[in-house]
Length: 324
Image (tube, rainbow, N blue to C red; front, side):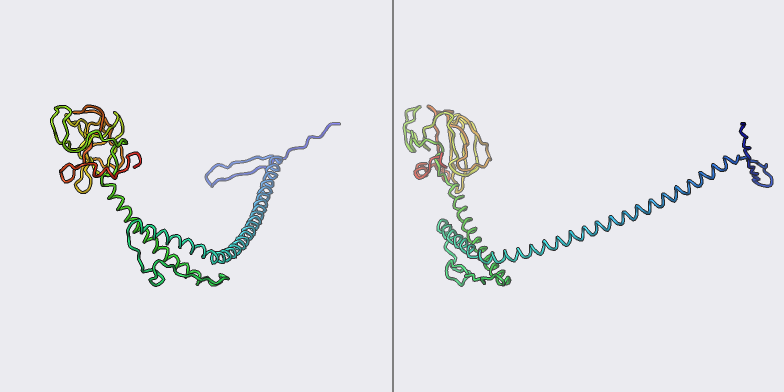
């Protein structure tokens, strides 16, 4: 059987741009027209679906935000609960603090005894004006309610305790300053042996010159020392000489307080320079036999007010250099 061909009816659109322009015709088949309509409808349906999806997403986001706010609210409630528990713990600690004050007072008593000891060492007379009305070094008496409920009274007594502790600390600091000043003055005086050896091979005063055989005044002492043995500064001071001399060899001179100088001769090496500040016991050089010398040793002088004095006057009570 032969199929009948369906005639494709066409639609004609006439376009007239203006009164002077040419007329245009647009022939569109019915099938094309239906296709355009279907596409337009699909676009409308798609736009509606997209708007519905956006609305759904907004509702979902709002629900998530509400959930997050509920979660934060719960967290804040938990935080408040924790803070309240912490406050209860602090109240318990305040009670414990009341009980611990007796221990603090015991430590304060130890501090008082330490104050007296430091004063005795420093020679500072005790301050008899104490916080508790002038009865020596006595401490204020602190009495707390056993329950620890009166926090105001507890705080006031802690303030008093802190004031007393501060007073004692200030007294100890003054005593410590006095001790440090005494130590500084002691270190400024030649009070240690300049080498480890304490054997004097040639004393201070008249002696026979080993080179000429004539009697000459020996302005220092010769101390036995091996070549290269360290030489120490006998006191704090400033280096005023560190040079080579034909007779004295390598020589170092240090100026100290009170117009006192110490001199170290015949060194094999010098470790300091002129103008350098040195501490008592610092290694300033090494013993040797440079200059006019018969062998390794240290020639040591102490000069006071421009005149040499017998170093034994200082070294008789001095400690060995290795223990300084």
